[in-house]
Image (tube, one colour):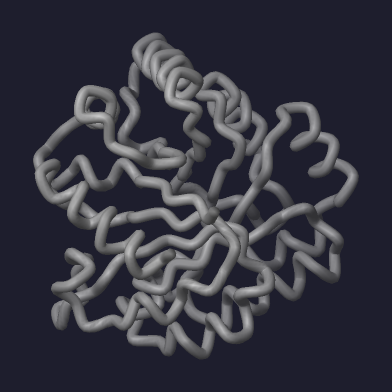
Length: 243
């Protein structure tokens, strides 16, 4: 059975913290397979952030959730890997995350990255690593993403891909065309619908045919703000199409 995750961006619709969102899922026994936490939604205070990570780690164990961490920072700089990567891996390990996701960053840094160095680093922290197409021209267009994935394969780097169809729609690109080519590289899929103004919306409110993308045997993550009272309906609607 395919897995369905929730991204904590959902909480922003009601101005909740990730901790409050996690508590809601617990008390209401929302049935999901995993949670994707967002680094920018953690406390900026180191001690508070570590405390939050440990809480989510214990909750994840209690619910048998898979845990992911989304980090809005560049994986590659012009010289190679971002010097911040190991720091982020340390933070993600406190959370108990199995995978982190980062923006691509500088394409020129991909071929300058040592496969052994990156493999050893990910092995040390027992972590998988993804890039994603974001909502920027620099890191979100099909041309940039496909070039990045080609370079990653040619260099032999252990990096997978989080496909976000909604982000392609925001940039007015053809998500279906991108999916045809990039689905083989995809290990996580972000689900959202987009309205005429380019804003993320509920699944049945936007202009995208999100059902078109449900063929992959990878975890799918609902990633758009919604009221807490809307979560179960959105999950049910998605699962009905998904299964």
